[in-house]
Image (cartoon, rainbow, N blue to C red):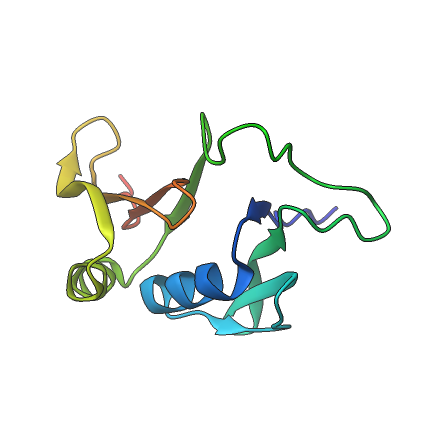
Length: 129
């Protein structure tokens, strides 16, 4: 059996969020548009963005009366961590916790907030023992 995560988050501005994630992760648009986006890295879907107010065929995926991003973290493991951190700093992104060593996982991490205040964590691969 194969299972691959394909997370989708509700955002207020799909195109702005798409640009933010493309800069941070080196992702590419796989769909584009003001209501829905697929972000790809090396041809693999890593994140879907959906306009909060757009219901489409399935109804809205978020409650517009509640804050976005509360109690939720998007975690990406990358072998491009230091360049991603440099891109985030250069772009003026909101960095919650600068690049640091997590002693529990024994790897480097960067904690950021995206345009809708979702917590986004980048980490390098943990060493194998």
